[in-house]
Image (tube, rainbow, N blue to C red; front, side, top):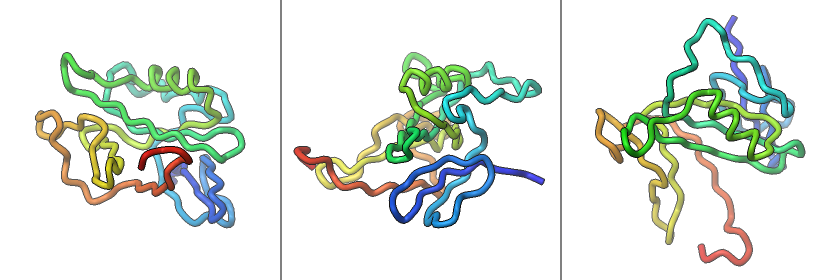
Length: 155
């Protein structure tokens, strides 16, 4: 039996990362491939997998209260720009941010972070596809978050 860790969002914008199942009241969920931190504690990595190679990565994290979400996209496979990160480096980054729980979603060339800038979509990172930097991979899935602008922001 395969068990996937899950990012769970409730109708009241409570955000949780769970090891197996989302709680009752969850309205949106997306599965990841492994938890990196669970309640502030490092989750052991699989010793049978080589985790020493850097890769592009996408991960999400929550605070203890479940009212803050971090989405981190790290570029990779682009010499002299970004080689990517190892899972240990990714965990260290989140420890420095002081988050509570971290879920690694995926990595690879499809890792793209887009935001509305002046009401137009703009890639905030440099994805890579077919070894061409800034070329976005044609994928049919995404995690979309819509948030109102912060008070006092220009957008």
